[in-house]
Image (cartoon, rainbow, N blue to C red; front, side, top):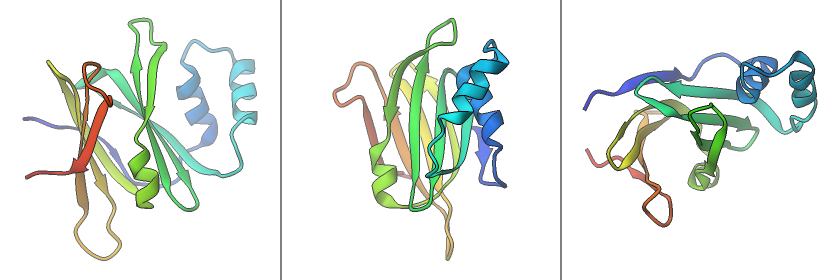
Length: 144
């Protein structure tokens, strides 16, 4: 399975740019300024990750002082958010997301979330999302 690399942990993202990406390219500048004013103080960094191999999805990563929060959003053909699901386990793990890769297959989204390692090898988790399952996702240590 070919993985599409899209995000590498790097320098700080500009919140204004993240706001632009979150709000959509068609948003007016005033809408973006309004959005930027609503970002909570606890958000230290934010980013939107799009995968070429999964064009109907985007990942929204928010870095807080204590932990990261990751949301997976399914998009409509018009680019609006259809569903937004937080991968709650990431916040409780108190780890930093270092990389996200993935693709879409007949069952839904398959993503690999790599956590940055301060003192060793990075650790990778698998994320499986399907509209046909309840709960809508499975998040677990990578099996291979």
